[in-house]
Length: 299
Image 1: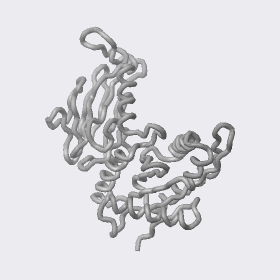
Image 2: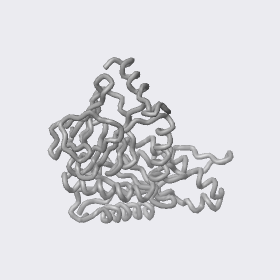
Image 3: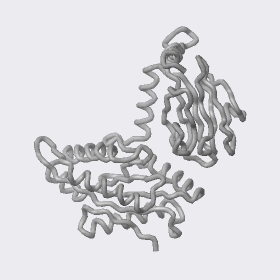
Image 4: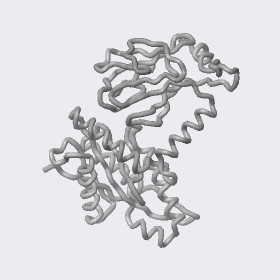
């Protein structure tokens, strides 16, 4: 579709009452591992699936690598199944191809439900704010512990079912209590916030960066083995060590200690086992001199 025609499509959707224009087509995740996420429908074809080539990448049991696609044709938008193993459902009915209307519910996989809708600018801002407040830590903007726990469970299940690698990195800030005692809690908050921004930029989009508690953070590295996760951990460690944290004109040297664990590992029976192993590796880093990465070796 020519760019000008596509622009007209997304700028001419109006509310039936003739009120505020709802000029942007979206898929919003109502249930599943990425609940709350919004995906704008802009391209002629948008693939939904769990594979690397999918524009909307969702990890859930039953989702094929290229499961379905959303197709823009003139002023109409269609949902098409791409020969998925378990089918694509719209409003409870299995479909091969269906024109989408505002409010349609799309089921892919076992638990992922997407809502097709049009938003105006205010709708978009409100939805994003709701998403951020529910899933993000207010200070650091990293994902909160509840989201981390839920996501780790789903990633763990996916990894076991598909025999796919999965790694977890736990880390905390070295001597953070001293930072608060010496420079004040506002300085400590500044360090937490700036460090979160710094490390988020150093990670892949598919990695899940979360505040686990206090000065402790976690990174779920989807599709990464221990060696790859160690490289990620070392990159994070070096980024923090070399960054100049300054609060009210005072330089505050900061380092982090990290622990890494991963799958496959016959000793890991559930997601909490993975957390425990990463935590043990973190403990070794802290008691081995800090400012280092320790990988839990598989026996």
